[in-house]
Amino acid sequence: MEEKFAKAALSVYNKLCNALEEAELKFEKDVENLVVFFTMNGDDIPMKFTINVDAKRQLVIILSHLPFKFDEKSRLNGAMATNHINNSLADGSFDYDYETGAVVFRQTTSFRESLISSDLLMFMIAHAVTVVDEYNDKLLMVAKGVVSPDVFL
Image 1 (spheres, one colour):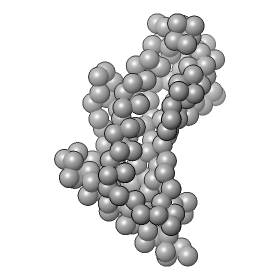
Image 2 (spheres, helix red, strand yellow; image 1 turned 45 degrees about the horizontal axis):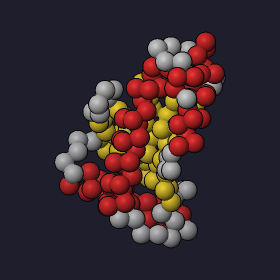
Image 3 (tube, one colour; image 1 turned 180 degrees about the vertical axis):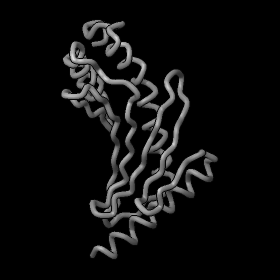
């Protein structure tokens, strides 16, 4: 079973790398761990993404760690803001670590006993980039105290 999972994961990883190359996106590969890294420039804050093809769990996982944290005084505001955003998202979520104030966007899809197309992978990437670009600056303004949670909500 492990060999079957490994073959499926490698197939998905190769589709991912081919799709990124066809889209002419610059990215770094970590073939051993089935991971790619890339940065996108949005409307304001540069966005770093990691995509992991998890063979064991048969998942494609897109992560984007936001380049700031909520300090101790603003952590409750961060929890309220990320919760509000997550309630409006149809796919993906912002994971919020209350202890550290860190925020990570996460989006996943399973490829267990499925065929994943390059189009699906590119759709996931486009969606992740759009969502992070839409909300990273808003979360930063809440973290810096420029916008109160009341105004944000």
